[in-house]
Length: 121
Image 1 (tube, rainbow, N blue to C red):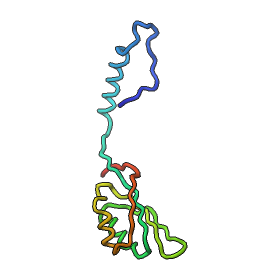
Image 2: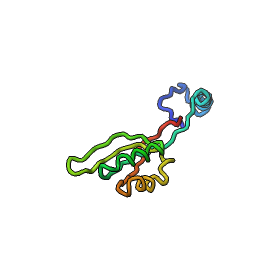
Image 3: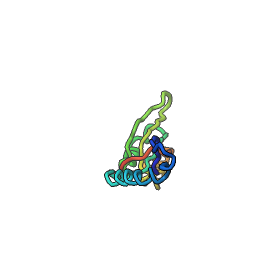
Image 4: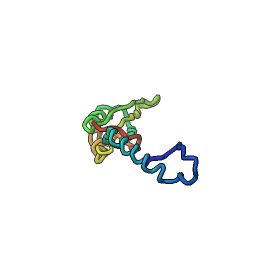
């Protein structure tokens, strides 16, 4: 879909209309599509994982196996709770919860939310 934001039409009313703008716009849009560099994009989840501090190793291992990238980790001021934020491709998220829980002995609690689109390599 293409949106035209600004156009200057012919002064005479008889020359105004679709015949004036459609052929020119078609050629411009066709040329822009031919010169573009298309790419494949994949959806990425922001995963927030909560649990005690001992989940760090299992969480990191599980994320690396599934092409995930750790964004940040935050330790709570009280207790031994930890919050980890990571990016995970949606394609790799199927079965992620079960895999994460098995590698952390059921102590990690993930929550996945769509975050952005990323260009695939």
